[in-house]
Length: 340
Ligand code: NAD
Image (tube, rainbow, N blue to C red; front, side, top):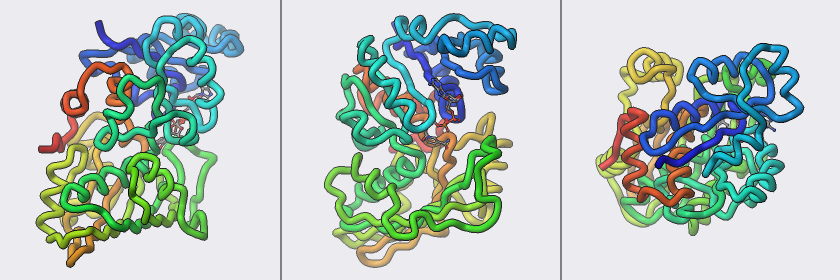
């Protein structure tokens, strides 16, 4: 029998994770929790997901005519694992309920690192989360950074990381967020929180410094990273290391030179919805000299954590091995670089 999963919060991340779960042969979406009968609930209805709502929302749903299967408690008593994709901080408030019912939980990067014993990335610490009660899948930016460091660390021990993160100002639907003009250096004094967040997953990496700039774009983040290694490496070594790491794609800058082209290309040719689960590294940006490596890549913030959520479910449930899970997730989601 497959892993029975409930999804708490059906927004940007929750709806994508629900869809991804429904594509897996070894798990099922028992239902999703919505608090408001807004436009996003229509996607859940269209995809045939059963909708569960908190008591306080029942009346609103009744008035809207959207069919409701039951309460949050009704859903939770039927699941093995809950994916909590509620806004930052709400997951922490929900955790005592999951704990009281003995349900394993996958939280998102907006929650604090202290919430669960393990902050999760499939490539780095799938085994650490195996059979645990809860994990926090780190944020989109942190996931992107970790994948690249992990890939390059296959060549040599990483001594030092420096990165500038250009963050999208808002997701497409977030009409009240900005900026709509200007670039915001936030925080003005480094490191941004990403450096600390990377360390919650890659243990032993002490020397990492990140700057974060918020930009008026909704499409994707872009990172420029500099890594110092213990050994000398060539550009070719770095390309090979990236190519053999799952969920990293290398593109040619003369064909795709911006996040705008990338997302548009993804919509037309890569997969429905244009979601990009992979880090997209510009081959032309890769530079290596002596112990130093530098490169630039894009991170589609709405999608990159989706495969990690799927692997986190299997790890908590203690079903497949790391390699089996990554392979199955990649195959079912149509991820381009399967690694190896
Ligand atoms: P979102 O606002 O798009 O979706 C959250 C959903 O949860 C909404 O539908 C909201 O109505 C619902 N919700 C609110 N309170 C609830 C409650 N008590 N019970 C059930 N549902 C509730 O948010 P998001 O962007 O999907 O972010 C969710 C989490 O994922 C956050 O921790 C965030 O930091 C993280 N994350 C977001 C992104 C991104 O780019 N948006 C990327 C990676 C990680």
